[in-house]
Image (cartoon, rainbow, N blue to C red; front, side, top):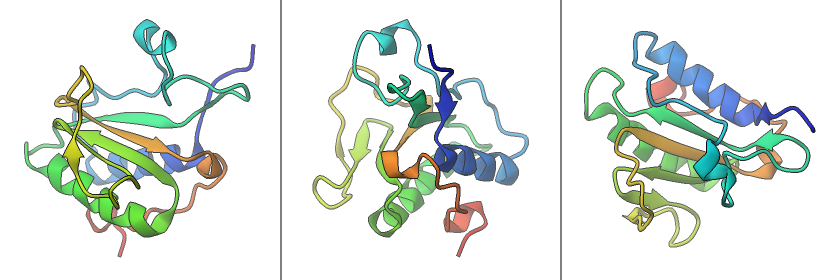
Length: 138
């Protein structure tokens, strides 16, 4: 079995969140899928090469509103960056479907305690800095 490894884009993004919010709670952070994830298709499950392309970031970054703003900045960057596959937070999902506009998320987990960020396969080895204003970017 191949050892799971997190996408370099996901590592970079998580590092930027950690650097910006060093005292944040990480209680709902994660990247490897649990048994529920393993039973279905999920970016939290390693692919045949071992790559995991999703991270969850605990919603509470010190102020309850901050994650909403961060998710929206990531959504705006995703239109041009090309490494992000989709974002789920607080009952909404944004992806290239409908041009990165937020729409209702119909999954069982509304992602209220964490924000889910999925990354594309082409981002596996792309650890460039994310130009997100709230995370030190332009």
